[in-house]
Image (cartoon, rainbow, N blue to C red):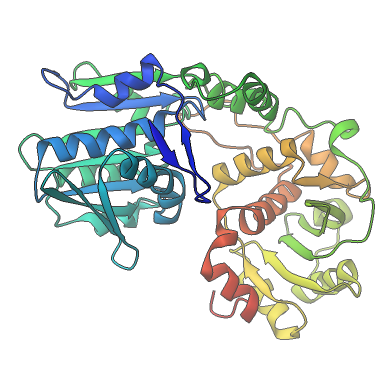
Length: 429
């Protein structure tokens, strides 16, 4: 199989599919007894591309003039992770694809048949209403473990056409996750084919790339994303963090600055100053106040005074603030010096992003940030529970780092709404 690369410089050959990838591509071919397929396991194992090609091929073979759903956590992540790699592949093997960005669907044509594939984001419980009322021939869930159960079940309920099938794709989460217990453990009784992928199932990955991914993760994230296991989170949240490897001074003047804030009056308040140098964000210094330790409870205005001391005369692009701290956000905006942006606050996603950024060197902790260094050694997962959760202690610098990473480094950085918020100071955000 061949396709033109994204820069249009010419054609390049695909690596032949592995046996596991071929099973994902062809599982629905007659006389298949299955009504659904689950592809889970390691990152970069090739499961997403194979499953999405399989979904479109099955839909075009089985239906004409029908509607289908492609579902991701957000439409933005779905387009980036699934649709952008998929469309060139489909075009290279003879499918005609026409995407409507404003209306959120893709029309696909082949051999006189035409079907429509709608794009949906299943971010939260309210997302289930987006797909109500549709009649679908099938649905593909990309990263189904990151979607709420209500959205997944509502989308499945829309698949009322004769011969409808379900395609699931995900990386592992906690063994207490509803999808693991309701679908993976019950795959046989649900007439569902379960295909588990490891990185070795992707023949296009070189030995060097495999080794890089093995170095990138550790602890729970290594077991889930590299080994593909549904394991419970336990122990330190960031077990790889060592001052001798993760802490160093910034070597020069920075070109861009942010401050991140986890606000507290009774609980500690933690603010971090971030500077961009050489492609990495350095946590240059911090403000950390624990009212229980000092016996001094500070007001919004007193915290703001320390925020200005932390910023000094630097050109701070924005202050990223705990979204629940409405009074402190209002205080910052009232003074008129800084743009205050409510932070992205999805805990588990944020922890993954911080771990990736630390391991890849995208964020670096500087020696003056002593309370941050202390918390990295104490921040732990809860010992029990069906779902992943962190202990609500030693988590204040951890939270403000998570706010910064998710809001400024994460996929939300590309969001138009974030850019407008920075430009306008977050008014109305």
